[in-house]
Length: 351
Image (tube, rainbow, N blue to C red; front, side):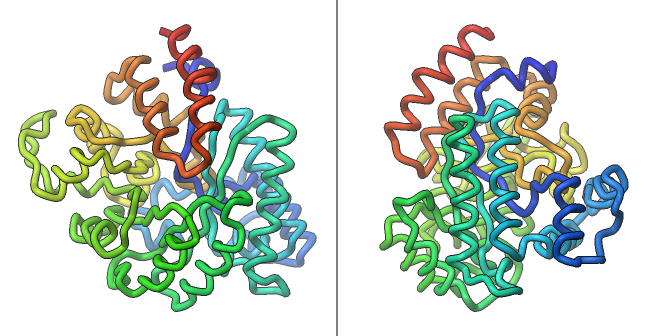
């Protein structure tokens, strides 16, 4: 699938980390302005190479690179700039709807509060939206390995209805179940926020079951290891375990990021990634970037990868995009308008 064609198609993304998508030029400038001297390189090409995690092979090593992006995002001005550029970059890539997530606790090493960080993100991405027409929602992430998730949820709840649409648990799944964060999840849900939890990325179906059953997740971040609850023969899923059947039959959205999954060791290459198997079996899978900087991707490149690897038609990409918008946490009239007036006409013309 040619990149230019992919860029022209309207796209929606549900799983995109703000601190995983900085422009390298901005990182260098922000590091200089705040006195951060530990960037791997002060040359844009060298820094891009150093930040790329294609050979990391594990989620732990992959996540280590975030220490640099977070370090340069400790002021309102820096956070607002990163959020603004995130919105602009998505728009230029043909994204019409983006749910962007970040952990505000990571941005409080200086004088900022969690609320300060959230407001800075909202200011920046609202500026981008006003300039481009991009529709967006912000998802607030707490870290599974930390103990402040209830405070993060309270901060997120203050901005429900004002741009914040969801709550997330990110970080290491292993040894950090959602059961440790039930008060936070309850606070977020009672405030009216959507619940999407990272699960089934580094851990198996048990993690997904916990996110759904105890965590009350409405969507699963990644979720690709649900393939371990399936019987696969050749290029077809021939039998579903009880959890996999529930996820397929209840149409629970899986926020899949193929390139990121390869980089963290879930699959060895695109051909061995389970996206195609899950899609053909009727799972509600969406295409996502996860971390545009660390994985060197855009929504256009991910869409092209999925189409070319698994032989998807334009009509199938259209259906995936519609289902992605239907799974969003933003207001339905906006998402419905995008489906009817942006997505369907554009994909029909491309077909």
